[in-house]
Image (cartoon, protein in one colour):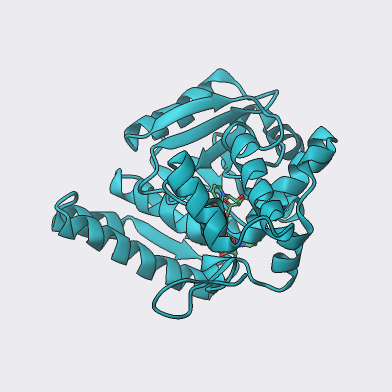
Length: 291
Ligand SMILES: NC(=O)c1ccc[n+]([C@@H]2O[C@H](COP(=O)([O-])OP(=O)(O)OC[C@H]3O[C@@H](n4cnc5c(N)ncnc54)[C@H](O)[C@@H]3O)[C@@H](O)[C@H]2O)c1
């Protein structure tokens, strides 16, 4: 199947990165968000990020201009109906995702493939609530999308081969690498990564180390490019908590219980970098640990 026009739902950190790479690869992208300000902010961010690639010589000024001209935005979700592929990248909440697909369904072209960038929610369950479980799958980009090489492709139980092949074709055109994951809670990357982040929060909660000592230990002691708490702030603490809840509920094992301190940060609205405060405070020139 020839994919030309792609709809992206959600213009947050993932939606803007996904739009950026799709437009540079030559796809026409229609980006949607319920929040008009998020759409404006995404366009500013995309322009700035592509400009950074231009200044490094990775992208030409003409390619930048062409990419930006391929992006349009809308607050009307139903306008995504005629696209060939929809990538849903809205907030990590199953009720929100169901609502988005339910609103889209009556307006979708027959051939449109539906995908979700969810980090953890069951693809089979999301698919089952649509009219096209065979043309539905998980399309999981990593953050930051322009820099990260991997895309996890997750088949629901009913996903057919042409749908998988069409999504694989998009990944290849982006010059990224696909990993196939089965549809179990949090798939591969987050099944392994998120319990590590949650354990780092427990280590902080129990007073074994401070924010700085925990991050420094994993950077210098395990050769991780970022410490786990720094990474949690980067991902978004609400997203981390949502993924831990999916692991806990879906695998029914107490080893996945979210750390109460992670819950507390989310309750405080300290969601990480996107709101300038999480395990670090980003409001000044240098990030300052909050514990
Ligand atoms: N943050 C990460 O590192 C990461 C990595 C891979 C995948 N993901 C997944 O990507 C998705 C988005 O995460 P994010 O980090 O970009 O979140 P974010 O909070 O930065 O952005 C979410 C966006 O969705 C919008 N939104 C909410 N409800 C909507 C609706 N009904 N219709 C349209 N837009 C709506 C919000 O206004 C917001 O702009 C989640 O499913 C998350 O699990 C996140």
